[in-house]
Image 1 (cartoon, rainbow, N blue to C red):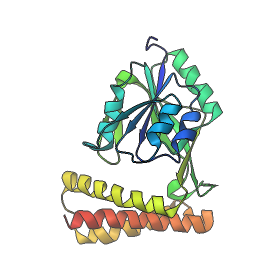
Image 2 (cartoon, one colour):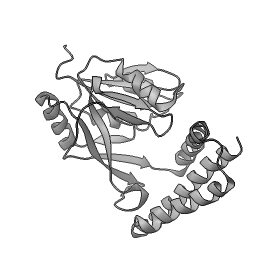
Image 3 (cartoon, rainbow, N blue to C red):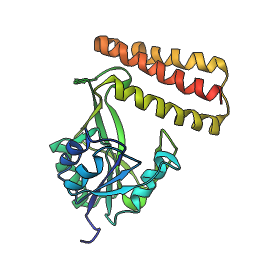
Image 4 (cartoon, rainbow, N blue to C red):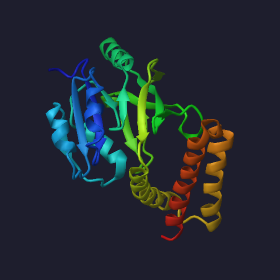
Length: 247
């Protein structure tokens, strides 16, 4: 099949056996699904391949941006959509994606992401709905950054009308496991870009992160969960800056 008017959905994974089936099944609009895995030891591969996905393994050298750039080399599709394993496309988003791809208007598209935590869709605080740039003409995007990667695009941007859902946390154990790994990578990136932070930064950034999420962004309106997630934001920032301080 020619790459013209073809859509590839690209999914980065690591031990996502709990998520990968529902993720892949949510992308009915895709001409192909490609999974780029960074060392899963669970059933992620067997589940993904049983659903028809193409599966590739690659270490995390260069961080998340390098993984996403590598993914671009694995398809000839004219369009690519990046989806995380804990995200799901809605039926409306599938229809809209197919319309965009068949229409051929070469823009990069943001999609609204509805964050669902412990079954609760968050409308306030640090996890309120946000816009994420995910659909691109394949030749128009390049990724940068090891942890909080960002896309550079050489085309106009637009927004989709339909949202997707992000089932970000369902248990504290997996959250804390990711916290340790991500804060180590974030600390390395911080030191590489800005040098070792002051101890004042170790104290100030977590405090500001909590106040921003809970007070200024309305996290208190989400009840106990809003307080809990603002507290976890502070923990993340504390771990990140503490690890950077002692490097």
